[in-house]
Length: 134
Image (cartoon, rainbow, N blue to C red; front, side, top):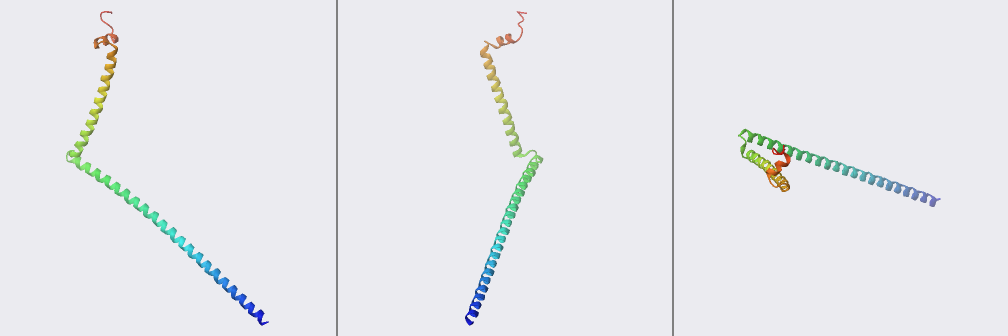
């Protein structure tokens, strides 16, 4: 009888131990879940910080552009200013280079047409009615 009682007691003790182990495991799982949640929160914060940094950079770019605009306006108000004159001169040089290239191409076409006829007068004769013939 006593042996049976001791066995039951040991069995109850083992059951309590298993229950404590299950509880510890549940607690570890809850802790892992809390850690995962903290990591997700840190990641969300990193994303927000990157977004804020992008926004700050965009604002810096916009501010630089506004400053350039204000500077150009000040230059214009001062009568064009050196930079503005330089820019206009560069643009005019580009336009002149373009015109020169176009004139060169036109001269080249003229030379090619000139090879077909013997002279400018001869070419005119080809295209215009001849006063002698008419």
